[in-house]
Image (cartoon, rainbow, N blue to C red; front, side, top):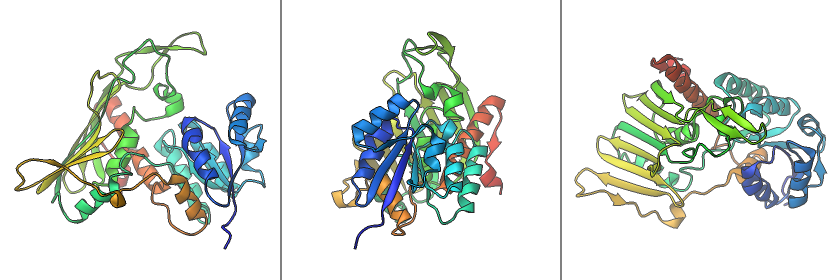
Length: 351
């Protein structure tokens, strides 16, 4: 039986959209990428030529309201996600938006309400890729109570990606474009959320060690408005405690890792070219590298999942709007705590 036809319109063809989303959509039976709009007509035309997309729209509003589009893929910077998402849902389009979900928690709540008003439409966020590969094996360990009770969580994202202050400012260093998120805090916390209990309270400090960067468009130095160093202490439902360390100015830093320490065992995940999981249980002489069988590994299937949900073949797992709102509340609580130098409780934990 022929698959349901789904016509995709792309708003914002950034690096991840060109690398993953467009080619992956084009590889699914019955799916067509029918139109694109980018920051300029010229860049939109280049993307259309590269991928054989038949139409370049003059603006995102025209794409969202086009009768030739069934679903909208949003690949813009976070500051546009809320406006485009809400308009697309109101126009009767399914939505897959790039992460982060929005600029702040208020926008994320608007997006949740817009999706609730159209329960017939699919609303999905591109998930954190970290843990998709090793996630099924870790979930099996957690289901088997390998950790026992979670006691401590360590989340690390520390490297030298922003160490060289002579390099031009990146959009992630501009709070107007990136919103209330620091470095890879949101994306790593989203992964940690899959394996741990919810955060009740945060206490954070942050700093900008390199306050200015060159702006190639402006031809001058501009202010950096997103911290390049962040430390967070967390308290979780059930009593576990956490430490988050994020930095873009750490030479020879540890990279991205998540550690979970429990009453019976330990699980450490190192994210790199391949995800490696180290485990140790009570009675073991030392920790060991977990041997994960190929059939037990997960994989990136974001575009497949989005189309599968539209076709009624599955439900959104990675990542629904409710989950996105929770990580947006977390990143906002961290920003408020660092600004006030006080602990901040999360709204979802207070409800």
